[in-house]
Image 1: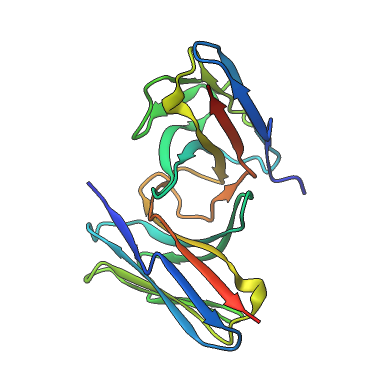
Image 2: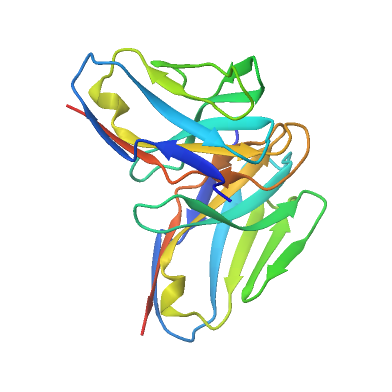
Length: 114
Length: 111
């Protein structure tokens, strides 16, 4: 069971560059989300999706775009990277939006913007 | 706005001790509460999920309680082992599977 897979694990970007963080799950989960984790703070929700074609903003969406064309994949795009986006990014999935179930997290992508 | 705090921020104990990690939240209108473990440089591993209607959940040496009215949850770890060393995160579930996380408690269990 692969679970939630994130790529890459590490990335260094220059200010202004763009990139896509990949997230894939093989559990046929409807709900997927992206969080960022910064030192001394809890994980904060960036964007989430309740199914293919449906996305919405979380607490800290500025500077990030998402789309959900398939159930399995939920990529996170940084259009013009800024040093403030240096963080560890986690993708999560769970089986249903409206049902209280366990959430599964990927291993994270550590992003540094210089 | 829901806010989640965790006390203590860090804890160091000798092997074999029983310990309690605390989580507090400001809004009692929660969907569930989930405790996670995070090892350095790794992702989050779910430990226990407590539904809003439940008072506690147990898994092996772990026991988590939930008191919605007082906005508190505790994670009890019995007979701690060096392998329990990690950061423990409390996450309050809002409707729709979105979570508000606490900053975590960093636990070190010394042999």
